[in-house]
Image (cartoon, rainbow, N blue to C red; front, side):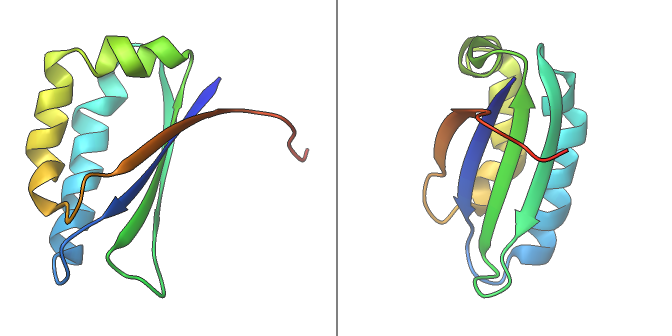
Length: 100
């Protein structure tokens, strides 16, 4: 399993609208993608315009090719993109260790 980690910064004062938009985009678009395994969204406390989005994929290619090169990616960006203050930083990780 691959973890996609996106560090998202949105425009100040847009948190309530973005909270709804990101949840809509995840449930309506990303959750339908090939290889999608789940997600978590964390919202900043000290920095309320910062979000950390974790999406779990079966393979790296499920995200980088199957999703990113599909019309669904444009649909996702259409839902959340207007809130971004800067382009999100996105990186991928594989599991090294975990607790029980």
